[in-house]
Amino acid sequence: MRPVIVLPIFFALVLVLFGNYFLFSGTNKKIERYKENPPFRIEDATASTGLSHLLDKNPSTVWRKIRNSQVDFDFFLEMQLSHVWDGNLFKPRKFESLLIEACPGETIPPFTLRFLLRESINVDKELRMPEDKIYFVFQSKELGKKQISIPLDQLPHFQKETEYPKNIYILTPEFKIQSETGCLAEVKLKEVL
Image (tube, rainbow, N blue to C red; front, side, top):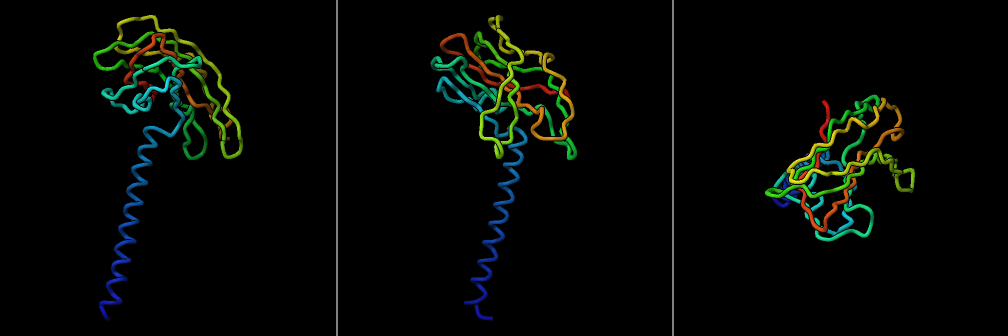
């Protein structure tokens, strides 16, 4: 065989193999990242920067409020689904607490938290915003704390579901920092396993 024929075929084969490896490894990394932090909505009404840092499990990265918002909240974080698919049905999850951590060297600013159960909707079938149920309101009164754990025993006891998205919610804390500035490092849901 002549090199003029073999080299382009060999080169094309190497490119296909390299492309498949790149696609496979990149997809696996994204799937692992999805398991850690699903692509739910987060919104910062203060136009501050770094809101995604509250979910990255790295206490050295922070969100710092730099101005007041024009609405009744500063930010919200859609965090976890109330149920998980096990292959046959949607099993309810049980959450123990919401953990809030201050920035390194600082304390948690006074805040009001509205804990929402946001309706999980099939966006491919419904063109509307999900409905929110305010499940409880927490007013932080403790000054000088570096960490606050808010019990979630007030949440309903979710039932097994066979149809998505019926009775399945996105757990969404909505924060209003009471001062003009403030800094938070992490917001985590602690789940009972």
